[in-house]
Length: 299
Image: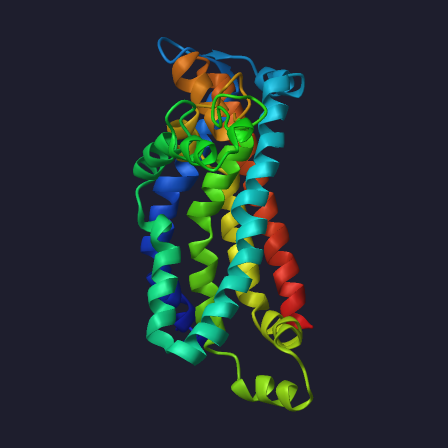
């Protein structure tokens, strides 16, 4: 006879079975196949040639590969660090000031406006920003010339010194609405008595924000940092639409470098090795984030 505790555990596992099968079919099997391909020399046609770890050894001396990770650091700042900081401030202003003085409906409308770039298809946003940042008749250069700052007008996406900064600005614009929504939802669960007690003690708005609001939003901050960092590491579509990794590789990131090797250079094995390294990096960072979050929750 099966013990009741074991029978209950088995019933729980039954509910996890569909998700487990989906994970196996969509994630684990393709990842295993990708790792297998990364150990071969293959153009995408014919029989792949087994070369072991040679592709990974080549990565160690590939300057473009390491440069792509340096570019990714900038994108992590633009898509995770800055949106988190800006999202905290914007959410606090909308929740504490706009919501209190003009009503939560007004705050919700402004929140929707900030979130709008997240709803737009990346291709549409990229095309629009391509027009805005065009070197000759782009809206940004026209505006700078109209106000007398002709010297500041430039080729925002075509200059190797400006391209990555321009992409970072566009990604910040796209990403900032997500943390605002998460943080405003989190502020709704903060006990108002904590703010009232701090206000009675003479704390300023900034003091209440720093010592009450931000510590109470720690779980939301971890979630936003984790999801935005993962999104930054695997970002592909904005790079493809805006610059295609150019000019001269100035905006190439690992996911786009993997795509180039897969489909443009027909070095499928090498592209699979890049994708494998990127996946392992994402898994390691996720484990570190969850470990730190778990330690913070126990304190």
